[in-house]
Image (cartoon, rainbow, N blue to C red; front, side, top):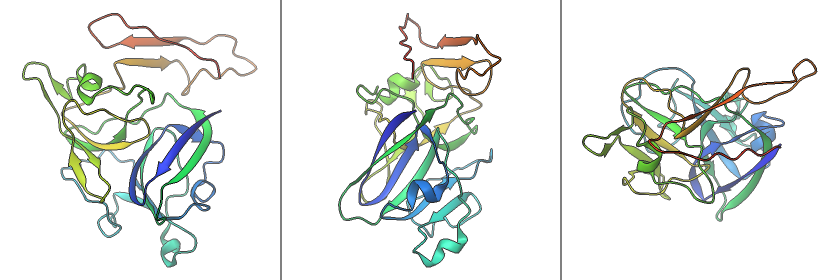
Length: 231
């Protein structure tokens, strides 16, 4: 397992979970935190053509899966029962100061598909110590960047007041943060350097497996170095 550090600011937070928690029940992950609610997009390939400001009333439709803290009267409405790696969550903290939580779990190479011609609530697999700009991350994806015009599809990030604001092309991305990202047409883009495995979502060796292939696809127009770390 590895550990991901989440810093929840007062109010709304857009979080991208990068690990599969050892115990991934929503109650186990969230119930001991000062949280009012957690919201996840329902995993359906349906179009979203507008941006919502963060509010429990605005999320109250079939496109969202809610989890309310057990102390809240709305807790009987909970339908978000488990959390998963490479998923985005909107979390409303009730604390007056930032709350830090370390989530331990295993990383996963499985990423959800992009919904074409729609906004996707998604995080990016980037280096937490040196995150790239949005344009440098997406410049090799035709669904997110037009090399002829130099224009990037619209991306919004959540600000401290719970409103989604348009990012600039050269703004830095951030590990563990979720964004509304518009995707034009179909896409299977993951990152400039994309890994792929034969089985499952990682190099998981069982009693019958002694060898697995890992393939790395360089989407950029130049050479790229990769580092493998045994965990």
